[in-house]
Length: 259
Image (cartoon, rainbow, N blue to C red; front, top):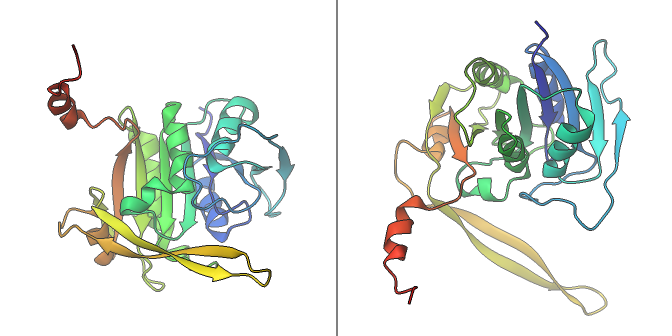
């Protein structure tokens, strides 16, 4: 039997340390092919390239023996997955993993995440997919304590598959060099960003803005990703890309919308 084919991608760019660690973790589980952005694409959500050309080239980042095939892409994380599935991979992958992101994608952050959008794009095409994130924004973050959790979750996904229309959003607490206490399957916490724009003026007198804000947790539940992370547990949230609010169909159907 051939080894499982694993597509590895991210949103921090093809040279990001989190991606390099994820490649090494996946190399023990199957044949790895990397298709990742040639520059950082954080916060791009599910953007795709429509009105511009898209470029890809084969690259060599890690030169050690057995290095995987790697391709940089000029587009977004979702572009990378589309291009990989349609043009680059020799066959349909058995798994797509995205990350390991530098920073949290828990709770409401999943909406804006390029990391998760890459996983969702694979899921839309029926490929089991996982987005991995470490709750440490530093480029020098220590990813070694992530290894066992990442490999375990990926191996179980390869073994069991995922329900139709579902991908996994995995967030790993930053535990200062100590592995997490465990893994918890949970729900997305209800939260928001209290945002504001810092308005400034450049030397030419033109106004510009920096987006800033504070994360506001609105959920006291002990079954959420934020609770798990606060207790040094890896959070695993099954995410669906059917955005229909099924519970709202009946109430809205009772509106006077029809003659």
